[in-house]
Amino acid sequence: MENNELVPVYSFCVTHKIELSFIESLQQYGLVEITTIEEQTYFNESQLSEVEKFVRLHYELDINFEGIEAIGHLLEKIKAMQARNLQLQNRLSLYEKKSGDF
Amino acid sequence: MAFIDYYEVLGINKNAGAQDVKKAYRKLARKHHPDLNPDDKEAHKKFQQINEANEVLSDPEKRKKYDQYGKDWQHAEQFENAKQPSGGNYRSYTGGQQDGDFGDEDFSSFFSSMFGNQGHAKQAKYKGQDYNAELKLSLRDSYITQQQTLTVNGKNVRITIPAGVENGQVIKLKGYGAPGVNGGPAGDLYITFIINNDATMKRAGNDLFMDMEIDLYAAVLGGETTLDTLSGKLKLKINPGTQNGTKVRLKGKGFPVYKKEGQFGDLYVVFNVKLPVNLTEKQKELFSQLAALK
Image 1 (cartoon, rainbow over the protein chains, first blue to last red):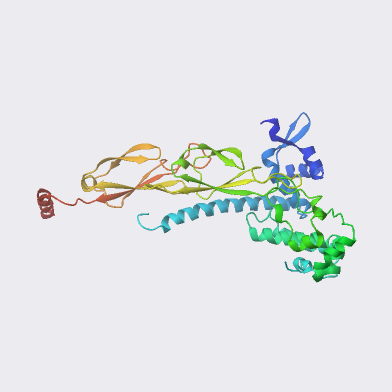
Image 2 (image 1 turned 45 degrees about the vertical axis):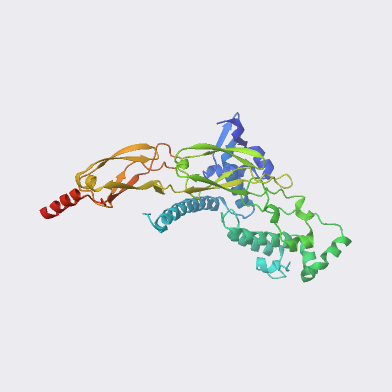
């Protein structure tokens, strides 16, 4: 993992004006993976948009960590169902086409 | 431009206190927040209205002005000229790389006409507009992982298209949309893949389907044929007595599974038995003999 792919937790918290304990709690709930390098904590850049979403859910909508965890699972399910729906639509269109199709 | 009843939007009455506004906003925001309603444009629109109503009703100065002018909002400009603009600092739906922020149309024209843009624009950093593009690929193109260079707003973007990409699938290229507003991050580029079926082959999920014509003699006596598949030529045995419409499954010879290297769907071959036409006298005689043997 390249260092430039890591987001320092401290800088993230300062930028978003949130407590460090928020990220620690996310980690405890398994919602973010924290890496420690030379006593500094980081999370991967690929998780940035997810973590920002959790910040909004908690601070703007007042949703607690249990709620965030549940929402995270449900959004994953929605994503999987949307992908499945797309697959099925493609499959259906195959049968709906006329002449010479299966 | 129509008057917007912000109290109605939040479902509260005009005497509602600050806590009631907050409570009503949170309740509706939890229902319509873009983070909780991905790809739902109606929810996104509704959330904009809720956010706008909250922006006004949670700020005592703005609320006072709104209550004072209300339906006579057209006179708000005169009001503005007579007073210094207020510096609203409410923390609205802003942020870094979020997917759901509003871009240029975050507030209605009604809001702008009453409060101008300076109230929140000083504080808010907005993500730039997202761009959408379509990329057409043939079935054969999407069979193998390939790299393509696209030109987006003068910038060359080199993208890797993984084998097995689905028709209608969307990929996001972060930061390749319009530049951000007030120092906000650039928007994203969403590319939708349009994959056309091949003339000889059709795809359903990770499986491929193709028709194969065989002559009557191969169908009756059996034999061997060569298939032209996406991965190259393939020899296929025809069993004696193969019926018209017989479907044969070739395991692992279908389409690659998206982002799962080495995994493939199956290839289904449907045999179409072609009957001989324009028979010679000799052939007719032989068929007659066959018929007599029946």
